[in-house]
Image 1 (tube, each protein chain N blue to C red):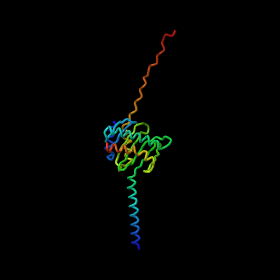
Image 2 (cartoon, rainbow over the protein chains, first blue to last red):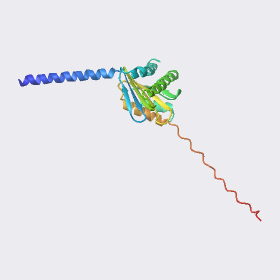
Image 3 (cartoon, each protein chain N blue to C red):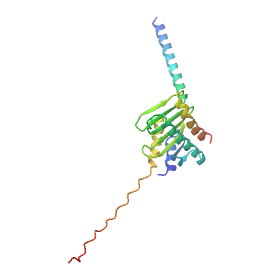
Length: 69
Length: 134
């Protein structure tokens, strides 16, 4: 009984770790923009934000110019 | 320190930075990792990115930093808190953002123009009253 319980706990722990790792990996690939202001505040725009869609072309231009001049 | 030297130092301390440039408005002050023509395009886009980012908040708060995370790469733009100069860098996605921003700010500070010393006022001797009084 105890062995079964331990195996279940191990299985659940492994599943949670796998989900977290996958999420972290996907987050790392997402395109996003952070803007910091003079007063110390900042905003972060996710991949679906219209601000991201407005600002990303400039950043893409910069990266493309450096990587494929 | 001149911009080219400061940018070369930046690439040395931050190996994840692929290219960087310092600019004022549309004027390129120095670049490393790209040729001058490409650097001109980079600073043009970086200036427009800063302007466009400023419009993301009403009230006209001044933008000091922008970070764009793209697939596989990151774009960092830093503007002087009180000044018009700015620096842009392209780094690998693995770069630590805080460190890249710190190095870019240091780079800007190292190349900051020294304020011109105020011209010293020459002391002129007061003219002594003439002794031709009766």
